[in-house]
Image (cartoon, rainbow, N blue to C red; front, side, top):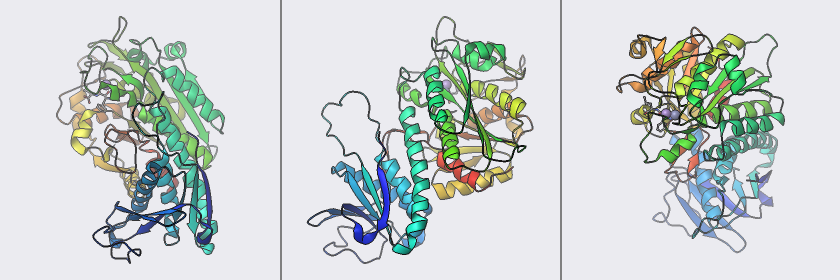
Length: 475
Ligand code: BES
Ligand code: MN
Ligand code: ZN
């Protein structure tokens, strides 16, 4: 999908369809009655004059406006205008000079649509946004331009990630993912290293190999390095699960909604998005991303319940359920991060458990860490970005659940509290490195999109982590 051209100008120069914002209690536009439009959050009213249309979108009560309110409102409004066939849209931000970034982000994210393959029968085509004008006061021009530039970088990267994320399992195998990473990183100052099957064997990645061995599409480990900080400064390691399709393997999943498991790669893709944005924004810090990728399939050579796998650091896993595959590939990558990069912290993203969806639903991701500073930094970032998380426990009380008679740990346990015991399984491999696990199983994609989004991958975690990193996240 081509990204729209964005420019910033003063209000007088607008000449296209327009989005304006209104808080509750503010004066309604001429001709609109209070019955038609009450300006509660996310409501809209369409006004027509001769040359163009104006879509007024409500922000709700002024005192309740959060940083994410405008982001969503501008997305909701833009999507409505696109449905009407608009291609060029202006956003009036003269009254909201401090919200230019979120408004543009919201509009860009709302403009994204997975193009799919072939024409869907019986569906009217939707407008594609070709140009976005941001209207501000003369005095705010310079600041707005800087904010727009950053929002444009981040918004377009998130849409790129959603585009890759929405590719089905037959079109995105671990090898193809690695190629895409090389392509995207190659355009930037990022170093990419890819382990194929032979390299994974050579270096003892028994977890990634075990999970991947049932598929004819062999696994990969993708590592991306970014150096924007001091030479001797320890990097923050970002680790993301990228299962290109999760059938469950021999412990096969039921058929209903199994197609959604094409999104089981979103942790890895979010991590990729963070790296691309860090490079484009030239963040002054060192980062390393590790993306283990495999397809979890049953097959003649698939790993089986009872198998014992040895990870990169010599620890072992007793496999009790081949559908708990994410944690297996993740700990192999985490061991590598710890041994090779001596990171100051490890932040790991994964669509890890159905249990976290039972606990928190689809609006908040589970934030598992025992590091107070990292937790507070991410909670603060969640507030400003609208990518919400909720603190969940990961303390030693859960270790018992994954204790094995024959290996370092077993990969499944009883169902009660399993979002937490899964997290504590992974933490064993981080050893004493400050560790954060973010379970995005409920937030990485949507099948019931809110008014500002489309069905599919959301890119959850990219804005959250960038905000935390920019605020100087430190353990
Ligand atoms: N990818 C799934 C988790 C998942 C399920 C994400 C539903 C989003 C929606 C993961 O690999 C998985 O299968 N987890 C199992 C673990 C169980 C076998 C211990 C689960 O949560 O049911
Ligand atoms: Mn699984
Ligand atoms: Zn999975």
